[in-house]
Image 1: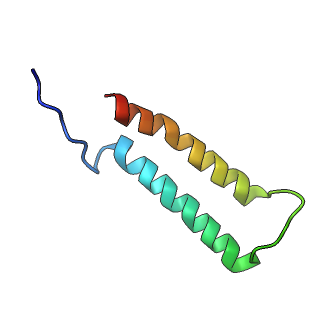
Image 2: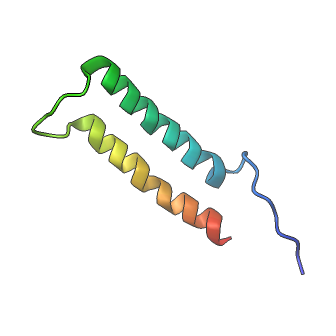
Length: 67
C-alpha cells in the first residue's frame, strides 16, 4: 500500500485554480470600481472572461480530486 500523497501548493493542479479564482475576483472588483453596478444589454468582455476562468478551473479540480 502506498500512503496518500498530500498535494502541495507548488503543483499546478493546486495553484492554477487558486490563481484563476483570484484573477476572476479581481476582474469583478475592478469592473465594479470603474463602472459601478449598471444594467447592460450585453454582458461584455469582462463577464465572458470571468465565465471562461470559472469553467476552465473544472479540469484542474477534477484531476486533483481523482488522482
